[in-house]
Length: 163
Image (cartoon, rainbow, N blue to C red; front, side, top):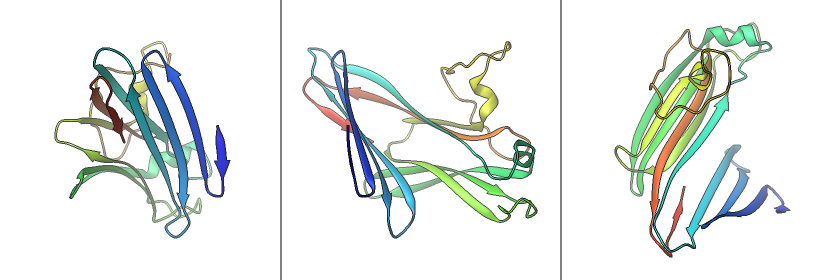
């Protein structure tokens, strides 16, 4: 683990996967960026699913979340595609009115990513935390708002992948 002005790096190895995660904050745009690099040090291809999730806190209390609207945004980039989930707080009384936050995945290809804006998908009927095989791709109002993105990775022997 190492830290510097505006960034932190954590490295970890699990079985044949060597992972490095770098968190940084763009000083001009005030955007937190997470960069993931996974190298395959094994003797066969790795098939992985990378999942990121944020729970929106767009208000003074949990009840304020009922007034947010979530939406999917996709954009083509020269290096692939950007998939972003947006959250806009419409209620002004809690101090977050007209504020919008986003959580995105850059560099994905068509059919590579999965998403949801509903936190309830992470809990089973008994209220236990689960990771669903696929997300229901829900957006809009009336949800328990979050932003969850996942992408499938296949990494050949001796290769690495970055997100």
